[in-house]
Image (tube, rainbow, N blue to C red; front, side, top):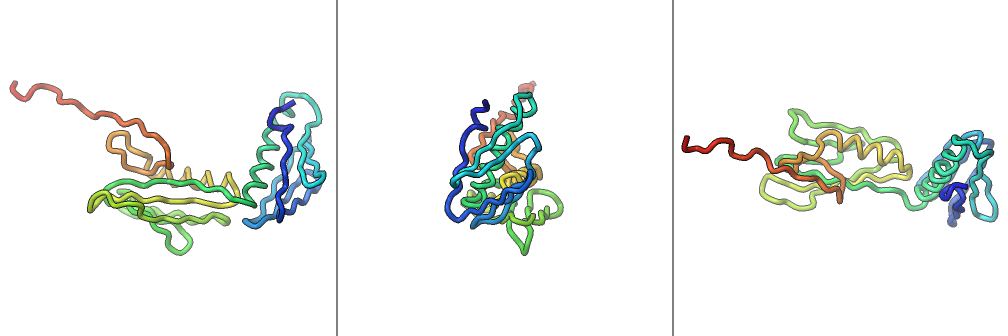
Length: 192
């Protein structure tokens, strides 16, 4: 039995779960999420709780059991509390701002990089502190009900300018530790 798959999912107040044949729809204060369920996995609702079970003990069914339970639990958490990813932008002349329905980054290219916001995703960008007159430290918060969509959009933003191990500039996740490199040492002595 899967340790994750056998855990019960509690449905909080204000959340509506609609179970159909191999399809689940969850509505809550933060939005509506829906997902198809694999035919070998069964999701049942009893007394305000969701139970996930599998048809057999094959390797595929065992792997899908825990996965399905985790995905459904993330849907319940997403429509009640939502998910947030925090990114940090550091660099000389680097800027982040939200204009209309898109995130605009200036990260050292000749042109600003534009990210249209997907449906259900909200983004805020604010200056956290000014290190010097030119170097700023921006905080970008990506939030939404769908955990996969939030993570995918945050990763897409991070890939525009990954953190530099020498100077530390670029886009990184909050709390991410970037191992810094020393750089080049002086090759030959200047006296020769």
